[in-house]
Length: 154
Image (tube, rainbow, N blue to C red):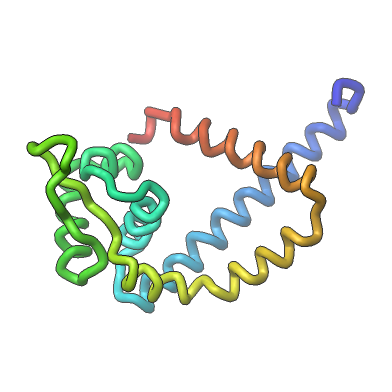
C-alpha cells in the first residue's frame, strides 16, 4: 500500500465510498419494503434488528444504540409490544429497570422476507477465500466501531 500512487488510491477510495453508499441506500430501501409488508415503521424494523443483535437489553441501552430519545424508545416499544414483537420483563440484575427482548416467533416472520438475500449473500461469500473474508470482516468491524464511537448525531 505504501507505494500505491496517490491518484490510484484516491480512485479506490472514491469507488469504495460509492459502493458503500449504494449498499446502504439499497439496504434501507429494501428494509422499508419489508417494514411496509409487516406493517412497521422503518425505525421499528431496525429496533427489532438491534434487539436481535443485542439480545435482551434495557430501553436505555436501546436508546443509546439507536440514537433515539428514551421517550421515543418507550413509544416505539409500546407499539412493538402491542403487536407482539417484543416483551418487557423485570431486569434480574436491577429491580429498578426492565429488559426488552424480541419474540422469536414474530422475528422468524420478519426474517422470512430476508431468506433469499441471505442465500444470495452466502453464494457471494463462497466466491472469496477465508483470508479475503477475514479482511472484509475487519474492514466492516472497523467501520461499525467508528460509527458506534460517533456522538455528534445522537
